[in-house]
Image 1 (cartoon, rainbow, N blue to C red):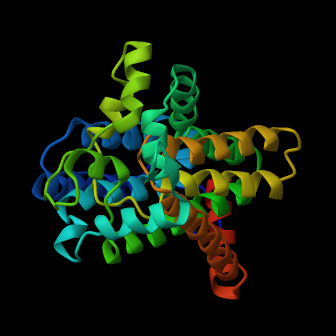
Image 2: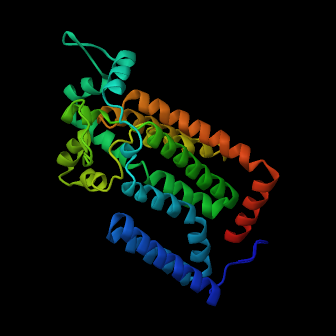
Image 3: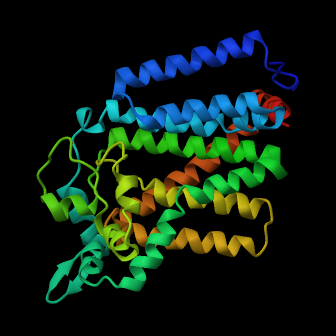
Length: 310
């Protein structure tokens, strides 16, 4: 690989590096979290795209940033955050209820509890659709930028990575239980609690398919509700949509963003304070990455990487 931007070619060196990385990843994954078909799929996809053609090779080199994020997220299963710090359950619930709760049927309830008692099928469907956009919309947007604006793609991908790393730091310094945990288990801490679809189960029931059940069965940590990265991701997309002057399409992106924020609370996956912290995390991540990108050293590295995938 030439740092001046020459294309990465299939030769003995690149084949050896990719093979060692693939084998090392599978072995480390088996040791840390056990064998999963997802790991094989990732390796097959990366290797396949690398060898198919120069275009797909550039594509997977660009999207390697997202693959690294996925691997780190997956490996969090091996290091549950509750082993490092106490989990916030009752204090977070009471804090959110004190700030955003209100009187309903003669007693003070949290916003999550209100919607739990007042859910509507049409909101369940709309909310489920919005929540399904959590990963597909950022990924689709990244693909669009990759084929139209390489530099903006790289900046988007690295901003996405930066925001996630900031979120992961908070996960480990402030483990937090989601609203559905309190609804099911009260304020008692129970290690190894499996993920739960919570209010999104109503969407699954209405469409007659375990869409969200399959997603949440793969969750890395139940006690990682703050910040809400579900709420952070669409901010990154909207920011780069506005930055690239996508016009009316930004209205759609902003609508999806607000829909995800609402559903996070409506479906009892996050408190309002989790959503607000997700917004803060995204904002700080964007500002932090922009500051780094404008330094001479980092800016030079980024420009060379753009040349490699162009």
